[in-house]
Length: 215
Image (cartoon, helix red, strand yellow):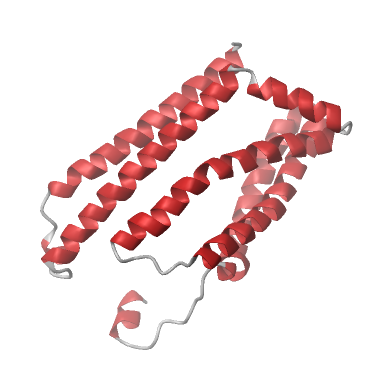
């Protein structure tokens, strides 16, 4: 393992530990009494149900993240990335399209790993706590639309980054950073107007005390 591989490996472990630690601290804080201003807004049963729900989804997220990390490390150390690279090189000659195919396959595999956890969370956990209104048809449609949006938006960004690395020389990293920042700001602006309505229905908040208090 070279220095870059060692850095990535350590970063993955640090990211895992920090996420796990933050979730542990969140769960640990659930037993503390609620502040009076918040406690007056909820009945005791609602608070307890929210705590049980948070414990359940946090444990599921920890399992999902752990499984994902183990699969990634196994794929890495068993030579999966080298194998995929050679496979893609046999199929595609162009450097840009080869990079898009390589990263696209990895992204699809990552999404596939997460689907069983999404199914369990949606149709088991959410249903158990009375939060699920999603049908199988809606679930599949949302995943298909999400895949399409990710392919278009992620594909555009990835294409730009790869083109810069192929042609911008030693300043490619700086231009890529600038491109990602600008792209992120643009998508933050476009998201509520164009992307989120594909998955959700939005209605203006009616006039009243709540709207006035928020404004």
